[in-house]
Length: 131
Image (cartoon, rainbow, N blue to C red; front, top):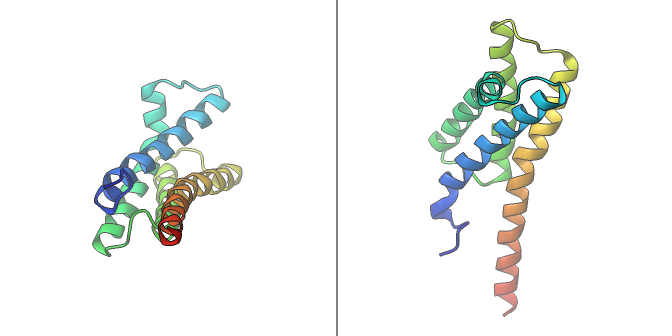
């Protein structure tokens, strides 16, 4: 059984999606010359992590394959929307430029790792079929 089997789908997804949000927050804070320490990254990341967790919960309830691009789209959009709503409710910044950057970067990251993993699984199946 390979590391990217269905059995490992949820642990891989939870770790990868969490890393996506943490990297997004850390790079964003660094680019704006804000503290990139754990407390600063947490301050920026937690609203988006909440969105990610709720989206993944919805995927589990609806039995959506967490590695699928469909799940990636759901996680991406829920993460951005919930993250921005929580930030706005706390009086944090949600400038249009930040929303656009969040949509583009998180979309590329959430969908990118899933596409790469899915592409690897498709290639494996094609090679096995030719054998």
